[in-house]
Image (cartoon, rainbow, N blue to C red):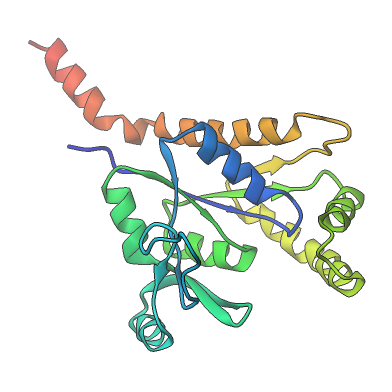
Length: 212
């Protein structure tokens, strides 16, 4: 029987670096996959349906919401994005370990609906560092930075509900901070694979062979 995959939900404040951490893990470890979201936006050049996103129109998205097909969904820049339960379950049934990178509220919804999911919260080392990262992006207005920093306290308060917390250190102090954080995320994935419950079939087979 094929091993069932594990779901890892990665979240944290904007600017904490979670996207770069996830990208680094996916680049270094092809045995881990990114969960594919559903969206109402049109495909961009080079994007493939079912690989980049599950592309649907507004009417179909409405139907999926009514059917309770999403773990979570939200409006983002005039389009809607959601995490399809069916897509996640198929990936897990096929034996793939999946990373789902979403915002804090969406993550908590997934964790409530899927007790087997592993919550990973990515934190900046300090408020000052987070502000520096937001400013370094060059895409945020002063008002946007103020709002985001104002939201951080509430987001960090939810970290107590996660299974793991990764502190993404300041690159100025720790030049390889990204690699360290990515290695920590993969260590969490590895530890999950090694849990006794994921080794039951092997242990049963070994025990049976030793009794012959």
